Image (tube, helix red, strand yellow):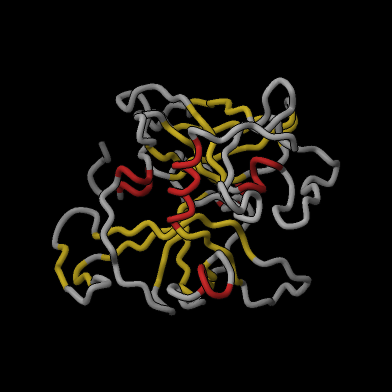
Length: 266
């Protein structure tokens, strides 16, 4: 249950630390997804789980380390207490990956799902993304979205930062006719890779079919947009600050494939 005045979506993101042994390799964000068999999956970027650039395969850590597990910070109901640290192995005993990739495009889609086991909801303050009610809010270029994550590993009491962005590519064209991801305009920071991206609207609501409605109470209308995977890398500090968002339907395709996905060599 969310405390009064706290948006339920703030319970979705989880702070993640990729590790090789006891060495922390970076910081990132992930979130939970409730699978059809009632178990949980942890959703994050391929590059977070693999420790490599998903396009080139280049190791992201300057010392050449790649994660063998993720340490997931799971807030307790009493946020005055330290979070529960849950270990999620990325590799099995033979060094094969434990994550599920996209069934057709693999690492070309910078999103993965990993199995995760958590205490009952009555003990931890978490919310799977797909448990929250979602409506087909209108999506048009220039409209605002929110990236929910932990820039620079900022934890506080376990609540994410809501970083506003806008659709910078045509939502209905980019995922199919140009490239597989949406482009958003946002000055994001390290640690937000793997963040859920949402639309959250209060007051008057416009849906894709042209219908209108009014939200007068609660947290507002929600639409899950996809998974953020960071900014385009350039050598110019004053670049356009554009980032990638992998559409929500790719997550469901990975989850559907997860039950039958077989481990593969790196």
